[in-house]
Amino acid sequence: MEASINEFLTYLAVERGASPHTISAYRRDLLEYSNTLESRGVRSPNGVVRDDVTAHIAALRTKGLAPSSIERKVAAIKSFHRFCVREGIAEEQPTARIPLPKVPDRLPDVISIDDAERLLGQPFPEGPVGCRDRTLLETLYGCGLRVSEATGLDVENLDLDGGFVRVFGKGSKERLVPVSGAAERSMREYLAHGRPFLRTKKASVRQDPSAVFLNQRGQRISRQAVFGIVRTYGGRAGLELHPHSLRHSFATHMLEGGADLRALQEMLGHADISTTQVYTHVDRAHIREEYLSTHPRARLR
Image (cartoon, one colour):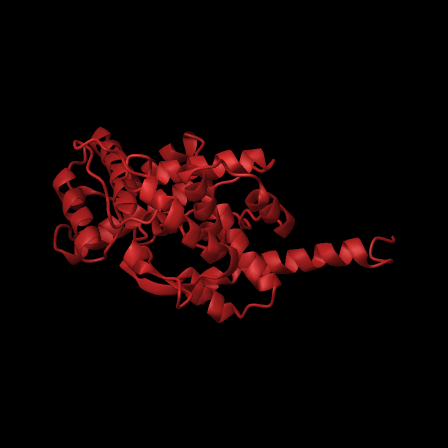
């Protein structure tokens, strides 16, 4: 089973261009699945039957996992078995008629425009670290980037004079994202007065000359560090924040400002317009709130 899982993960990395973060999540989910199968005496993909899969799903539910987490794990298992049949590793596809667990509709976390102004208008520490942190937040909100896209950003991807940033999203798909206003100004300030000073003189530390966002050792900043930065400054502004909140807020505020849905799809790097359409629900919720708070007879019973 483990050899088949490794073969599948190699396929995802090489042929599908999946990110290291995605590969790590798939490995974790499939090894957990493999442990369940082994406890049932199953040691090969060719020996798996439908009851083995449903037993694993039932075990996941008893752990109290969120429906979205179970859905992700089951999706990984279904993809693995499809791969096994396609590659001749197994004859049957035991997950063919097993539906993905239903996940309740949930609108993305979004902060208000006033909250965004409070977050980005707060005082940042003097020096290169504060300059970097401000620019990181401005870029996440001003360009709607995923965390992996921000951490993967290279200096050569910046075309500030042209007003664009070249971003490599899911599956290494390339797109151009506009950058202007506060995000552009902050980036120019950081490149001139912040980034050059995020270095260490220790010869033993391998630094990254291409990365835009660096840690204090001159290395490419990590996902964990970005989450920590967003959480810290969000807390100082009285907000509970994670990086994706800023991406969601970027999309919602763009729609509220009249952005075209197709243009927003391009900026976010969504392969399917239906993924972008979730923000229209947020936008309609905003319109309803405005109506209820401003129309003189909206709350009369």
